[in-house]
Structure formats: C-alpha cells, structure tokens
Length: 167
Image (cartoon, rainbow, N blue to C red; front, side, top):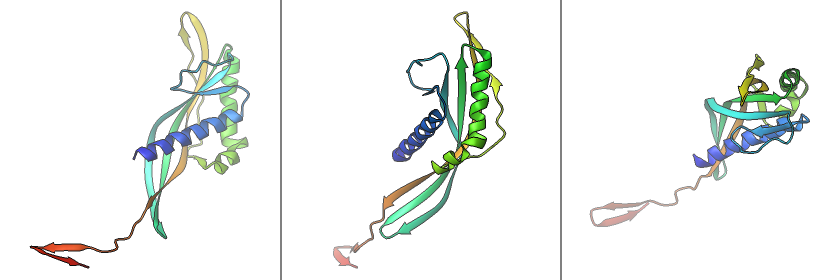
C-alpha cells in the first residue's frame, strides 16, 4: 500500500510539472513552503481521489500486474497583483487542459474526466492587502500499474501426527 501511495504522489508531481511547462509563471505545490519568485504564480493542490477502480489482474511469466484507474481531483489557484491577470491565467490554463495541450496530457498518461470546468473568483484580503486569486477544480484520471513477484509453490510438507509427508 505504501508503494502505491508513493506512485500516486509521483503521478501528481508529474502532472504539476507538465502543467508548469505550459506557462511562463511558477506552478508550486500547495503543501510546499516555497515562496514564489514573481507576483504571478499558481498553486497546485491534490484533493482526495474520488474513485479508485481495479480493472484487471494479469499474470505474465512469474509476475502479476494489477491495473488501477484513479479519478483524481486537483485544485489550481492563480495569484496575481492584478485581477485581470489572475483571471486570464486561470482561463488560459483551462484552455490548455481542454484544447491545445490535451494530447500532451494523454501522452503523459492522464485524461480529463470532466470537461465542465468553471473558473471562480477566489480573491481574499490578507494583511489588509488584496491578493487576486482565480481558480478551478479539475478531475483528471490516470492509471497506476502495480507489479509483484508470483513465486510458484514447489512442494508442500504435510504433518499428520508425527509423520511428515512431502507432496
């Protein structure tokens, strides 16, 4: 189970880096303590996975493979010192996810589960200073393949009373 959690976290990081490669501002993890270099940046958060489905288990030679489909939910928030810029960044990312960069998502092993993405105004006041924030939640699915060694049973020792029998 621990190994699968590591794979899920790694997939989330792969997705964050892919999204960051499409834009000219920083996309930082929501749980990191990094401070953005520029006033315009985005925060990427992984929300709890909604659905986990085990599709099939295959045995190839001495290994067993289990394929699981994860329907993950992700929150993207875009910050700027300008309301127009923050909204523009959010809508630009939605356009990339749904239209212009969708093939890049598929090549990286991701798929968009729901194309109904709404950009919301999430602006708030922090220390008497406006921080403009627009954002959206998106459902993206990905597959995790787990493998384990399948060692065949070579012989069985049966003990009945004091006698040992080998099969």
